[in-house]
Each structure stands twice: as C-alpha cells, then as structure tokens.
Length: 129
Image 1 (cartoon, rainbow, N blue to C red):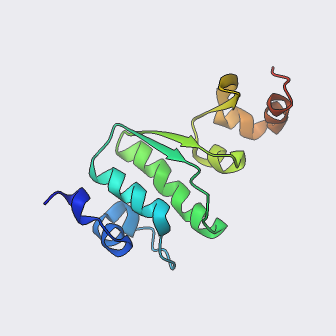
Image 2 (image 1 turned 90 degrees about the horizontal axis):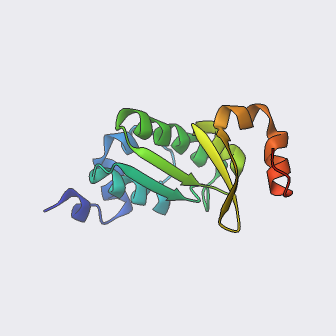
Image 3 (image 1 turned 90 degrees about the vertical axis):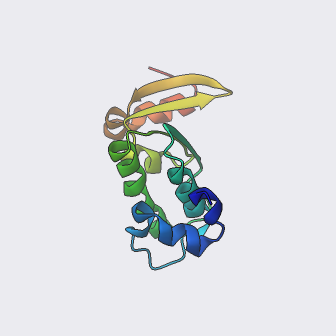
C-alpha cells in the first residue's frame, strides 16, 4: 500500500514522517499538518500552502514555519506560501509578492520587505515603488 494511502488519520500521518515528527509539538498537529505530511510523502517539486496560519495557535505556526523552510532547503522543493498575515510569510520567504485583484503590484526579496515594511503598506494602499 502507498504511504500516502496509509496516512489516513492525524496520528498515522504525524508519526510516520520524521520531518513532521521532529517538530515535537505538544498539541495535535491538526489538518494543516496532515496535509503537509501527505504532500511530503510524494516528494513533490512544488508545494502550494494556502493560509498556513488559519485555525492554528500562533505557537504552533511558529513551530511549523521552520519545518516549511527546511523542506524548501533540504528537499529542494519550491514552496509557494499564500498567507494574509504577511509578517508570517516573510519570516521564511526568499521572495514576496503582493497581489491586488490578481495582478502583481509588488515583488521584492523578502529581506528587503522585512527591512522596509513601508513598501508593503504602500502596495496595499495602491502606491507601489
């Protein structure tokens, strides 16, 4: 049986994958962790994560972020993180894009946007540099 098919419960998916198990979370990981675990079994080249922080306690999000970064680095997997809480995404991103009505209004290295949050603010207000 495929490992993806055996990851049918939170506990099964959580305990089978070292990259997830090594988080040492004191709480059950929730749906986001199960989906991430199932995606990793397939060794994808790209993972799209939509709203990672939704429904998770901030402490859990802070434990998951380094794992997402490690997946990108160690597995050579591109990670596209869609997140309305920009400060969360910028913690682990290499590049950041701001979309407005489907159009890219700002694209910069994440480090530049962390250093100059005014650029983000301006892009949200319709003024781009």
